[in-house]
Image (cartoon, rainbow, N blue to C red):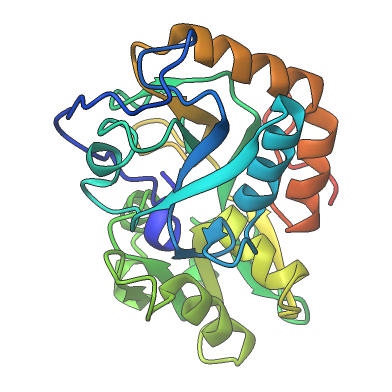
Length: 273
């Protein structure tokens, strides 16, 4: 789960195959003269039209490694994103998607992150969601995202304020609004997608701390491995992207840390920033 305020959406439906002029040996539709990236035009910290997101920086790194110019096809990352971009042959790579997304073919994961609970540094919250003190706190979350399962299981729905998931990201940023509400003291804690929280803390300077939310049996998982995505038939192109990820993983990790993305280690534990 990852887009529009932190939920990774299952996207797209049908394929429109009009082969562009620049076909390639890596696939019928993959351009050979440019790295054509499918991206959201207004979805920081991931991407925007000004190239300010960490996915923009990773795309630039890949383009340099491949010796290609970088081109974008921008489309809001909501339902229909894959159908109207990657599967329509307009672009060749989605920089961030969840491992196992059936709408496209996944590369190897290039980072592992999680939903978190964010709170003011001077007012920490209990370590466990089942602590009775949690019911006295004013909590916030994005509606219909995985932490809702944890809130329901622990009887915390009644003291949670929900922010909308499906918004026009050109005009609304519910994840940022939620975290600002915590920083301002309007809420005590936010349950939110880690990359959004990390960005607001490290880049925007909100005086918050965060902890990884646990994945509990019987509820939606909280941690996800993030991959890049290509069309299902572009197997050779996937191999080539995998090779670039492998060769430049250290630089990719550095970009993610620059944006405060909480990274999990091989044992699923939060790494030091």
